[in-house]
Image (cartoon, rainbow, N blue to C red; front, side, top):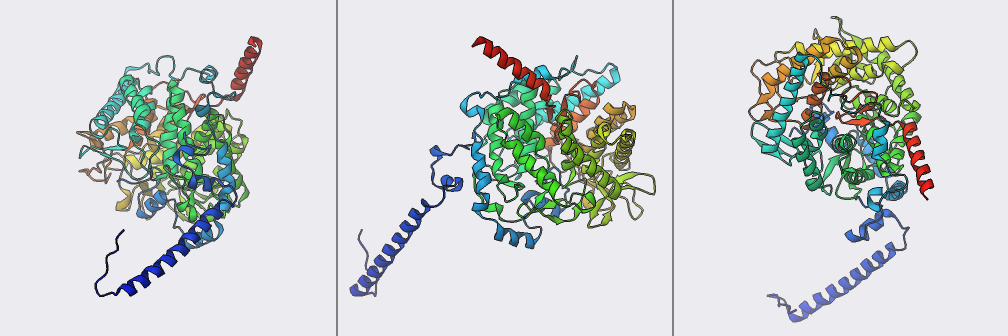
Amino acid sequence: MVLRKLPGVSASGMGLRLSQKFVFLLFLSGLVTLCFGALFFLPDTVRLKRIFLSKNENPAVTVGHDNELSKKVPGDPEHQRVALKGARTVERSVGSRAQEEWSPARAQEPAARDERVTSAAHNGERGSAYSYEAFKSCLLKPALGRNQGTPPDSETLQRREKVKEMMTFAWDNYKRYAWGNNELRPLTRNGHLGNMFGGLRGASIVDSLDTLYIMGLMEEYEEAKEWVQNNLDLNSNGEASLFEVNIRYVGGLLSAYYLTGAEVRFRLICLGEKLLPAFNTPTGIPRGVINLGSWSWGWASAGSSILAEFGTLHLEFLHLSQLSGSPLFTEKVMNIRKLLNKIEKPHGLYPNFLSPVSGNWVQHHVSIGGLGDSFYEYLIKSYLMSDKTDQEAQKMYYSAMEAIETNLVQKSPGGLTYVAEWRGGILDHKMGHLACFSGGMIGIGADDGPAGQRQHYLDLAAEITHTCHESYSRSATKLGPEAFRFDAGAEATATRLSDRYYILRPEVIESYMYMWRLTHDPKYREWGWEAVEALEKHCRVDAGFSGIRDVYASTVSHDNMQQSFFLSETLKYLYLLFSDDDLLPLEDWVFNTEAHPLPVIHKRCLQEHSATQDHGQTNLE
């Protein structure tokens, strides 16, 4: 290489500078070489392997490896920030403590344990591989009922057919204008990706698989299944919500597998493995945000985890262990329980923020709505999904319910029962739309509580569901606001402009469906039909369904978003509400918090089936 002489600099000066540079570069290269070589004398950690191995030399854990709102979080700016970033900046003190306590060495042990996850899908069937035929034979009733859940009376059947038409309309417009995107923007007729899924696409497709199948829309179901098999890219790069990926993608694929036997098991286990690095914290409490495309640790240095996020993994992870033959998924979520049982709970309540570094509560804010909701849901559903053998989940749920009744359940001057929020001992007399799922939750848990409490819980469930219906009936649109209050003369109405929106949420309708199945009181079907009429009148636009900005306005303003959970939850719960109870009977199925049906694990039957198979194999040998 020819060096050009710089103007105004003598040859001797130039030579001197080059000599200095040469000596400096020689020293620097030697230092780098020394440091690089020293790395190989350090302990053999998974993290170092991931740094130095090429893509073709991955370790055994190869994953096989703007409404930007979290579904379960209210829409004020603080909640949005907390939901999407895992509450990383809730308190500076937590951040500084995390910086001091966190190190790769602290995370080495759980990371090394992740090496045990080498799924049956990678290496062929194991002896412990899950048998789909055994699962089907252990169901107490056919999943789709004797006649697809068709109701006997013509009026209910017509209403069910209307819900099916709504699903077809929503799906066709998504397919036409937003295919492969996460959600449809029906006003502008284009797709929306959002930032909750870390580059994953097709949320509306995965969320709709079981709804399409349950409704008998088989051509649409086959389209969706083909897209998942050929186009769902699990190697996306970007920060994703652990919670949202789990409930929508893992839950959606699980239900598709169990309902149809679709060949998505391999992809399911791959995706489940991608979520495991979130647990690599000093306590094993997972972070709220995970990069699906890398095993980096950079985001794991500070902040808090949200109760409803790390508490809404149990159902899906137990089934991932069933399908993969690996106990690791179960171990991860059972460790969460172990820590929660160990730490002190103020007045028996579970605050919404926990440090995954120290294992201590960060704030004493308690809510059965956003930030807390599905934690409680998954306790009672874990018990039910275990065929009522998970006594730890049962105990935790009813202890939590006792504390909630003692501290949060209130009666308004007008006689409405509601569940307030708790902020360090001070009640905030508001209830979010998200909290309206609790009517159904309390209802399905009524049978297995303390002796003599069944009717009490059914009455409480009915009262809360009635209050949530009132939040709908007291609005101009007959749709409920995001949050409603019980103070300053307000009764089940939103007093803040920021709480008046409705984004096609399902929680009130979810409680209608459960309360119908538990009581067969016809008012729940009437209330559901009121919701159908309101959705048709105010949310249906030319190219899909859209949320609205103010439920109290006589002339609505649309938000231009057809949420994926509208297809997964709202329309599915309406369809089930107008179907016979033998469509996805509750003896055999629980619904995850995205309304994806997961089977009850009839463990004794499965063990007997496995023993019979082993005996038959022995005779053949």
